[in-house]
Image (cartoon, rainbow, N blue to C red; front, side, top):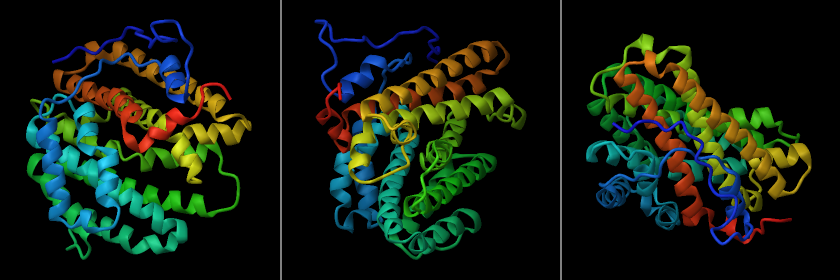
Amino acid sequence: MTTLSTTHEEIALAAPDGTPPRNLRDLIDSHLHMPFPFRRNPQEAEATAGVEAWLSEWGLTDEPGVAAMIHRTRPAELASFTSPDVDAGLLWTVACQIAYQFVFDDHAEVVGRRSPGRLLPVLCESVEILRDGRRPSTPLGAALADLHRQVRERCTPAQAARWAWKSREYVHGLLYEAVAQAQPFRLRTRDCTSIRSLTAGVEPFYPLYEAAQSRELTAAELHRPVVQRLSRLSSDTAVWTADLFSAVKEQRAGEMINLALARRREHQCSLQDAVLLAIQEINGTIEEFEKLYAESESELSPAALGYLQAMTGWMRGCYDWSRAVPRYADVVSVPAVP
């Protein structure tokens, strides 16, 4: 098992030849503290083929634009970067869930932009599938029901219940996002980050990492305040890091639920300055994670440590995926200096 690094391995502030950052991506690389090593799952290629077949099986790529969107977002690559140690079966489930969330999120964005109320049928179907085992009536519902089946087959009943609960939180978050986008009042940064913690969809993956351990974590271990805090820190780090690279795309699309864009509205500053403010917050979150992990490492079981180390995969994996994925390629079109 890989030992969690607690050293401050800062990314260089300039290129090897000493040149300053040229664009917004370079600026992020220059200032973001990312101490965890880059890794990828050796089963990535198989997961890529499996996800494409799974999306086709449930009819999700039949919808206009979905196949192109999946090509731009590379869900299996994100699964590989965030879950480098899991076996091929679990990697496939993670990759399918990531792909599903991208399709679901983009669908909710389009529908919710017209009217939040139009989202209710698809959101209610999702909640009833997850809570009551309702039979699906849409392709999205059928894909979610299959994911739920995969989770129940791999996880213990308690782990599967936590997956379903966290997945329902994600569904609720999409409604909050649609309401926030539709309202004319100025969205507070605190409201933005609260909604973002739900729509990130990161925590639904954590019960899968429970299932990857050699033994089931006890309720006492899972609910220890330090474990709960580390879970929150890792999830926030993962999604806020993605926000840095997606800010250009989302600003151009009129999106609001993004940490960097929230800082820009709050401080009435340039996008570059807002990104630097967001990086300060992310760096502080990572440093708190490192500190809490180091302080509690000797008190936790091997299973609990493995569970927490899996969280660092999302922290590092979201960074590597976000900076290279075509979905966020617009980040290099903005200069480092306003």
